[in-house]
Length: 486
Image (tube, rainbow, N blue to C red; front, top):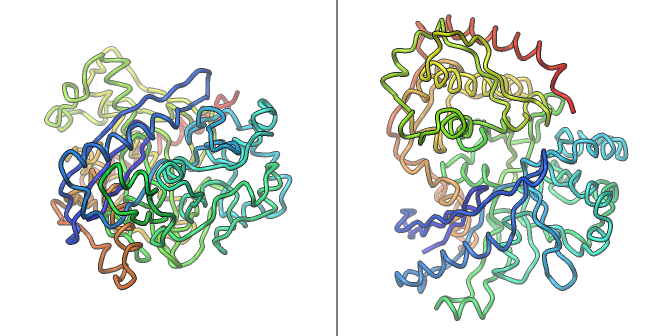
């Protein structure tokens, strides 16, 4: 058996997978995000470690750990966990959706010739490197005490193993990696006031990256099993969905939104804030459009506007009866935006509200607006050479058949909904653990697609109106761009 840990932004999910690739148990543990100042987003790494221990303790209580052969970790990317020489955390982790370091981005790019070509990415405040420049400027005593900089999942690895490792898919999101060569770039590190000694050792996601500490193995009645290199959250989910070959693609409707497409070579379109990262398996890369608010827009509407649970306001039948031609438009930039705007100050907006606008009209506008943001991202991917013909869909928002249908028509491609999509990232981490623990298993044998539950095709009758509304969405966005600034 194999454990897969998915260290999310709002909580940790732990899954236990058997040799046949079936999930036999899963656990969820939540923890808070703190936003002490505008643009800030932080978490306590201790909360992650407490959740991780609870997961192992719960599996132990079910007597499920004795036959575990490996552990894999996937998780939220870009976060900065700063460790001193005693192995202690110096400050709360600065998360992927933190926008405070936007001024540092231009500074870093100016320091390294060809920065975008080396990394494949535009420098953004969500990435790790500008966060360190912010710490250097605003918290110099903490910066001077840094011994290691770890990504969130690799902090859990450190607590489990006592060793410092990372892997290519997550490291590519730091802006310190030569993404084509799959190694740390000393010039990029030096521009942030760091060098190689501050970095963990790099391995591939399907290789071994440390072993469980003996004391923890004894506590949980396990062997000192290997930990896989693991993956960033989206690469881990892609492994869980069986996306390891060029052209395979997915759409994630979680807190944030992502379109992810596997490539056999390094490609990029950094000018439109497209992400170009290594995949979690050797000799593969991926392109990724990232939208900072996706299903979280629905949660915001339920919490802040309607003051009711999402389950009570999400009316599938009511959505089918919306007069789309009269519905408002919605810009889904509640926490800024990456692809293609790269603007931490972009804000959300309803346009076209009237006295006749209803709650269900506004909900429809939110679902459509998120879809239009994905359409922007897909266009940026296609300019980089991605050929996206169909998309596996996953994440909490993917549970809505209406939303899946709407996305198929907006994006003009088939949307595939598969079994197990809600635990894809944890399953992917467990699959990487299985690969790391075995020298004989082939990647294609382990990373297979799950059962197809439904296929959603573009609706030609709806597309003409949606294309018109997308043009209006684009016009409103363009008109508001001058206001998206500090």
